[in-house]
Image (cartoon, rainbow, N blue to C red; front, top):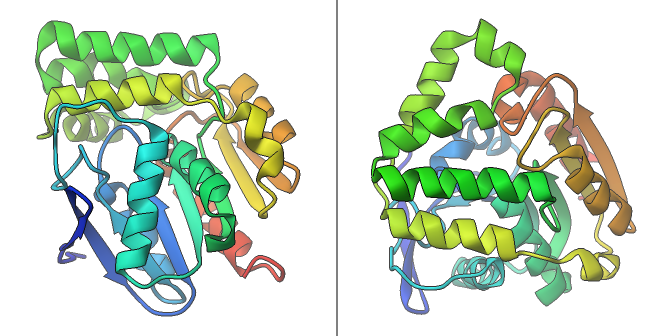
Length: 271
C-alpha cells in the first residue's frame, strides 16, 4: 500500500509524516535504522481502528537532516511538537529501539499526553554489549563511508541465528534496506551517540502509564539485561519476550507481534 507523506514545520525542522485512519491516536516512532516505512505493516492494520501517525525523525528519511548534536530528549520534543501540529491532545505511543527511548522522554516531559507506552526492543540504558554493538556499527559506517558496507557488517546484529541461517532471502532484503539509506551518515552517527547517551533508568519510577515492553531473547543491542532494567524500573509494566528472535523480532515473528500489540491497545484500562 502506497501512502502519501505530508510535512509539518516543527521549530527549525521539517518532519514528514503519515496520518491514517480515525479514532484514538497511536503515534509510531521508528528506531535508529530506517524511517517511517518501518511501520507500514502496522499502519495498514491499526488504521482500521485508530488514527495512526508514523513519521521520519529529524535526521532520517525525508525529514530535515543537519549534522548537529542531538539527544533522545530533543526527538521527544519534536514528537510532542508534531502532536501539537496535528492537534492531538493524547495518544498511545509505540516506539522501537531508539523510538522507545524517545517515548520514555515523552512520558516524563508530558505525562498527561501519553495514554500508554509500547517499547519494542528498547532500553532505558544500554548495557556494555549494546554499547559495543552500536559503536561497532557506527565505526563501520565512518571507516568505510558506505551504507552498503555498513549493512553487510551490521545485518547479523538485527536477526537471530536461526533466521539468518534459514531465511537468506529475507536477510538479503534487510541488508538491501539498510544498505539503501539516503540520509547523511553524520546524522546516523549523531543519533547513534544519542542512543549511547540515553539514560532514563533513574527516572523510570515516574512513568506510571500502562507500559508494554517487548524484546527479542537473542537481541545483542537491547539485551535481556537491558530489558530487565527497563521492566523492573517501570511501576506499571508488562513484559513479552520473543524467544529465538532478535532486535527485529517485529519482522521475524510478525503475526505474534501484531497480535500482542493489537490486544494491548484494545485492553480495557489502556484505551
